[in-house]
Image 1 (cartoon, rainbow, N blue to C red):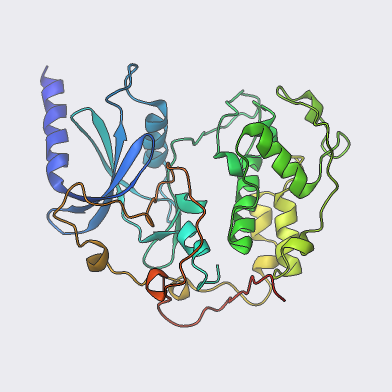
Image 2 (cartoon, helix red, strand yellow):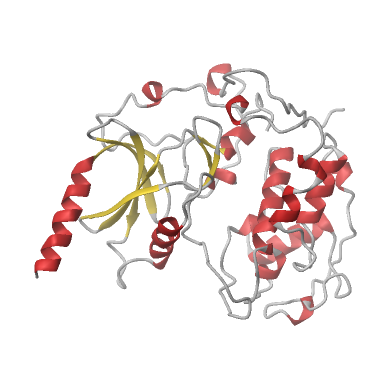
Length: 345
């Protein structure tokens, strides 16, 4: 009883540390609000996970997310500041980040699904939303194949593989890299079967010789139609040979032959000129906190459609408005790596 009361007192003190403002985005299982630290005024994001209607109690994705963020401390991972319960909801207090990579992709004025890849005010990219994250140490230990958002899910996962490595993340990174260049999702399927068909249409239908063991995967199914391999240069017309080489090495069917993160960082794309921009010279949103927080006193507020930062709502692929007022500007000096992804060359 004493322990229970102590826990309630600690929870109450955490609740009182923060003030919650308007809604930034809403998904199936969570709502994200803008908030601030009462004492300092520091901006935070408060992610309210809806658990009140769950018969079995706390959702496993919420447990995974808290566990992962408690263990991960890295400048490229969003920081978990606090966790507290309020009524029937679990609330995660996270560092507030100004924008996400999806906004950068959709803004035609910048050279650049990524709405789980957030960018802070200094241009530093950070990973967020670990609800579907899995940690692993033994590759012989079976794991669920139902992980990673479908558009970025590797073929081995779509074929039901229970044994996989970080190669699935490299496939996802390759899909996002392609999206940065195309400014629209590269392989967007509407079901698992359609996703595989979309991948095969884009990259060519794999064979057992190309991907040994493919036909032995749990959910393998032979597609009636086969597609030939495509030349990346025909689609990514504004990309360098180095960029296409890196992309191709990420989107290899056989996960054992797919490039690793360490190998990717050593790739010529990151070594050759023009060199990557310094963080302070990266594109930044022109809106300030005071401009976006005009409804700070309204706790419900209106959802800011540009800030569905945690990627739990189905993404809409919209065209960027031609109105300059709707576009995100660039702050600071010109980019060191200014790329033109125009198709009309």
